[in-house]
Length: 369
Ligand SMILES: Cc1cc2nc3c(=O)[nH]c(=O)nc-3n(C[C@H](O)[C@H](O)[C@H](O)COP(=O)(O)OP(=O)(O)OC[C@H]3O[C@@H](n4cnc5c(N)ncnc54)[C@H](O)[C@@H]3O)c2cc1C
View 1 (tube, rainbow, N blue to C red):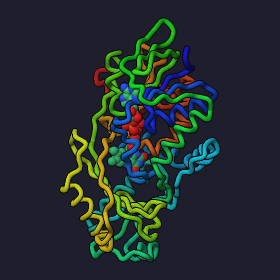
View 2: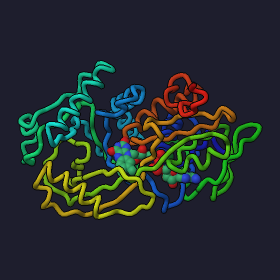
View 3: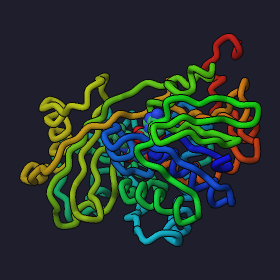
View 4: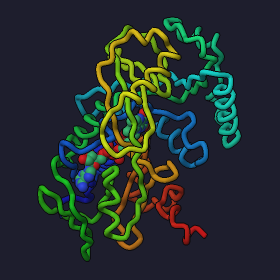
């Protein structure tokens, strides 16, 4: 055996799980893909976000909330292993409302979610309160208010990925880049994983290869349904600090750049379009007109890893126990839960008990009926 566990995919999901395994004392081998692979982990917006998440899926909302609460400890432990520092702040987050209709709809969503569980940390703030909270901003005339959730925050996702990758090595495990896995073969004991860099054996394998996950699990009769959703983002030059709170679609990084995002598109190419840039910029400047003078320095796109119902999938193959899959949107938000909750549950064989709501079996209509 080359390791106690092989993780296929070195994005933010695979590395957070691998870090969680390594922290439990397991020897982990992470096999990651090619330099040119599309990585959601390198394209995302960087929110560690709770409000509105899992509006129709209480288990997903709870896991999101647990993860957001675990983030400060997760960060402290991670930064204790590596040189890389991760910009992270949790001042609470905003969802701007540009009409009475948007304000009322958001208020109704918050009330619905409060009815599901007793969370007293999300409330509506009117324009006057927003202006008090953000004195450096002159809001556009359409801004009615926002919903404000104390549990929200944001982080630098590139620093997070780099830190997770370094931590795996620092904890004595291994990460091989340019090691695309072509197939996984179940053996009498464990699995052989065939990659471009060689073949490797381990008693357990976790496939966390983002949108490529089904390509590896499907041939083994292990169905992980996913769809991709393109998101485009814009980023401005560095500006003086004006936005003390991250918002859905608008946040200022610790460096001063302002990120504007993200579209939700049915598209399969990596392109960026003028239409999307226009749409994003228009809404951002309706919120803060002064942003129209900021210079844009980059526009990019990425593909969200979307299970059909939006909730994560953490599953073990029934036919080949020891073969797992993990796929989700919101891998930055959930990174702390992946390391501290999902990885230990996989090792301890508690996945189907502790995280049953996230099994792939929920998509099996015949079984569910
Ligand atoms: C536009 C956009 C905005 C987002 N904003 C946020 C946000 O604000 N907050 C948040 O929490 N989440 C956000 N996300 C989601 C987050 O980025 C994803 O949930 C996360 O990146 C998924 O991580 P992953 O590791 O599953 O996939 P990826 O990051 O795509 O990584 C997959 C990895 O698998 C590797 N791989 C693929 N095939 C193979 C193979 N055969 N063998 C070996 N390796 C393989 C690839 O090389 C890659 O490294 C956003 C995503 C997008 C696209």
